[in-house]
Length: 393
Ligand code: UT7
Image 1 (tube, rainbow, N blue to C red):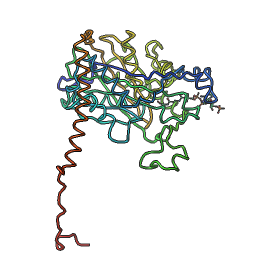
Image 2 (image 1 turned 180 degrees about the vertical axis):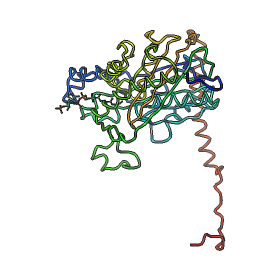
Image 3 (image 1 turned 90 degrees about the horizontal axis):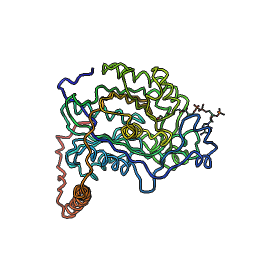
Image 4 (image 1 turned 30 degrees about the vertical axis):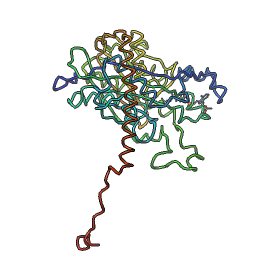
């Protein structure tokens, strides 16, 4: 087993998800591009996906998932040490979506950053969270995967627009000892030589937004589906085996595999390569499509809800995506935190907590503005540099 040297392990003690209300079916898509329900189902297994409404953003969906996960964990926002948001569709390039969520939660002592590893983002974020807990740097960490892929989609490209969906999932990691389970092993890998196989070329520092990038449609997903498919089928079973070996758990003793929900054929190929029955793999891609970083945390929530992930189970999670990147984790599922139905008073208290976070945020912004108006932040006076002290040319 990948033993923790100081006996500290990260436990998943809370989980939550948010998916937008709007459902886009394959039939809906067949009225938008030259495709059919039959093609999409046989090639991918996807039947429908969720699409963000006008008020949904990566931060708003991540926030909703985070609140549910904190609620389940019985953790208050001010107890969180670190918030990591895995996303390929951040609210802005900066500030980070994680900081926006930290502010909205009122997680006043938490650090916050976004992590970019394509659809593998959640596996990378879980790994970082696990390591921060094992090292003793953090006690409680929120790990979120959130995506609004519909906003970077080329809705005229049938090869990509049928695949993706929007949503968010979150887990709360808490430090503990091994007895109740925990994250036993993780791995993160990358092969940047395949970067061009799946990318969003425009809007970064290489091709900053311009009329030209818009004319060339560089702000939408470009993918070589066949090559990504080949890569995915090669790494899924290998990384599942590798992470299980690292944890010292024979792969046939793993009760559940939660794979990145990209394509049913990729999942079935992994099942064959691992010589495991298809039922051992959790699948919900028929309802949500590929939600990138959000796909594994949403699947965790639904696997627990459906009783497919039970205390004591060994679960392998495995993701792959742009970069190219891939990652996996073996988690021994712990005892669920007894979830008591919150009393009316507790519900009111929680609502007040989030209202207070909003008020606090507005107050701090207001104070900052007043301080600036009153000239309260002195800028350093320019100092004269003597000629003889200036660097010689
Ligand atoms: O998180 C990682 C993200 N990406 C992935 O996981 C994607 C991995 N790749 C895949 O899942 C599959 O490669 C796809 C689902 C994208 C495509 O399936 P495929 O079996 O590899 O199809 P293909 O790309 O080989 O295309 C077969 C045909 C082509 O027509 P021709 O050239 O044979 O005449 C495509 O133009 O299917 C056509 N096609 C479509 N037809 C109807 C492509 N997209 C569609 C469509 N509807 N939506």
